Image 1 (cartoon, rainbow, N blue to C red):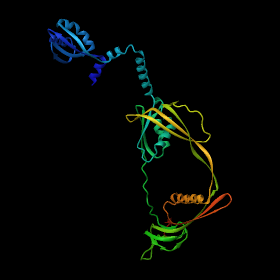
Image 2 (tube, rainbow, N blue to C red):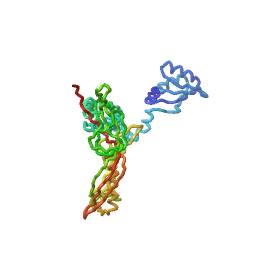
Image 3 (cartoon, rainbow, N blue to C red):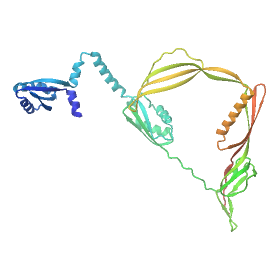
Image 4 (cartoon, rainbow, N blue to C red):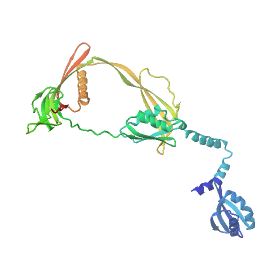
Length: 392
């Protein structure tokens, strides 16, 4: 392949030699160090290929061998340049294109983050941006050692980082800290009630139950004891462990106004596009006007070639008009809102609880609706209470 590239750069020709002694031409060329490849016999002579410079040297040898040579095909850069030498614009464009490629190769085009499993890649990009590492930065200004040290200080969840410049792409390899295993305490403790409730299920793994199903307990009351009397009259202490489920009463209050002001997205929107090249942005579409109240959606798309993101892309911004509206709420709508609030409360505030009953009482005055939530949840109320042991 390398020989073919050299031949293309220097230029080569396919020729035929016809006459009385074509084989003598091959011998004379070999003596003079002229390389001929792919020699083939043809009717009345021979054919082959050689470099353009050697073809000029072979003319006196052809006279001595009494043969006539003729070029059948031309290949290579010299003929390409000769063909387009009068097209000045093409030459200038090719030169400017080559200069542009060399110029753009001096800047950072994209990032590639490897090894971030639990850590967000956006967090790493934010720390990189704080230290001047962003798309379009001049690669000669990047101090890799300083960037690695600042990444270690800025991200406390990583133990090792390596920043490698691979062409115009910054490859950031990180190693996250190992997750600490959950270590179960073995210190002596009791299990007490976290809240008031009525016991529905007792599941003791270690310790001695002090309550049974149907018992009513108050917050802080002993549920499972970590004291184990021995037959010899002594006491053995243990780490009590249990799941104690109970029905717990929950009472909350909420309030919403009868008249609500809110913003709603209308059908009116304005699209704006900007062409991005490294740090440079140029308007791609022209739109005038705007909205007083708006919601903005931004999208960035980059050109990807062979899996590499190029520093060329499009930034699209869509502005949606927001309209201030007022709604008058009736009791049925208010009840639906309160019910949804209760469901959100159960999903996020008490995810491990199972609702047993719900009662929503809605009342109103001139300006607002009020709701009282009377609910019963079945949940695990066990909590550990460690105690110290002093030997006398």
